[in-house]
Length: 326
Image 1: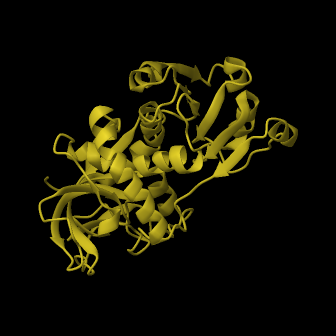
Image 2: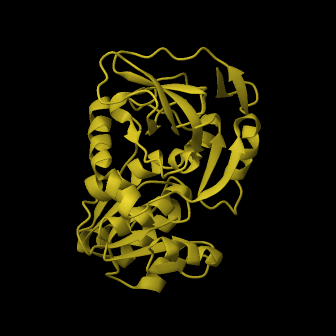
């Protein structure tokens, strides 16, 4: 079968012929229609990220963390899943014609959702749902600040915060041209951080929950706009890995700083998270119509074009690889 791999000599992506996966007794073989790409895919090919969670079960040179497609075969211990079902999952080596997935990591997809949309959902849904519910413990009417909101993950986070009952959603972007998109997805207030700072725009006591996808120096400013007892979940570090924070402010407002990553998560933790999301999925995808924003769709054979697009400043939302037919 064809799979996308990282060339050890050039660190570029190439399509290679690899053996099709064997499936274990608890696994499902999925024929992949499309796969979503993420910033972590670029970090992996640069040698700056090594996935260690239980959903990565392929060699480190394989590419891709999420996909959507049809079930082709199921292991003998799998119940409730049949060939032909439309599914999506966060799983290692997703940019391939076939993947073997632990059945407890699968999420069902309604036929009303396109393959490209489904392929761009799993990682963002799992990341943001986990951050809002398990980490920040969002409450009805909480004011939620989402930084880096026009990233693929952030755009889903805006929609999830709205769907989970946020009183208002505040979104940051470095592009004023993207403000209308954020408002259409549920943001009640959009801050253009290329023109103003978060504290300058909001003042103190402005949010109860923050999902931060930016990190770096801008992270330190976030506490100045936080309400007492606010929960700040640090998810992404697009602006860098280090920040200098005001510990006096942290203490005075009794803030909760929470880090999160999927690296190192074991199967039991992933199964629990997926089960919770699976139960909420009909409402999220149906009633609330949560969808990724698709920036572009690229064929597997021209994956380097997708890698280039991931680095371009105009990127808005997800880059998806077209792999097979649904």
